[in-house]
Image (cartoon, rainbow, N blue to C red; front, side):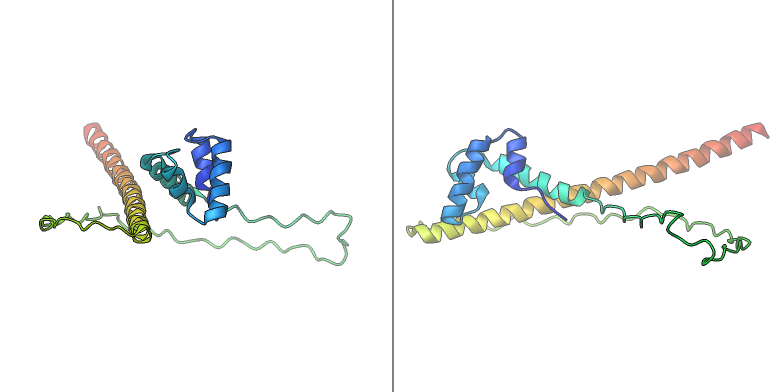
Length: 186
């Protein structure tokens, strides 16, 4: 499963130009820093633009469906000797018994438990070492990215569950309508 690069998504969204992407990729090659970090630190994109590009990348990966299996090439009639292969024998079809589908019930959704507010914050210590600051910022970025991807995944899951429940409601409405019509006709 191939994911689209963040840089390509940002160019498609007109957040950066091809030249800015090329410059950032050269900087990434030189320093080893992440592309998003380089683009944000140089002021070419915002946090929001990077978050949206990451979300689009994640959704692209989830939307990718496997390609259908390739069909074996058909053997031309001239290549297959007719006398070597006996004709297939037609067998009567085997009847399949009717099995009614299992009833579907709404899936219970857990209720969110209220969370106690965090304790009062203590004044942060100033960090003077740039290396420690960098690692601290990287850790915050990773945590925000993880939280954002989790939020996108949860949102997509909830959307699918709501769509499923709406289908169930529509099916039940159709059944009720049929029953009302049958009752009115009798």
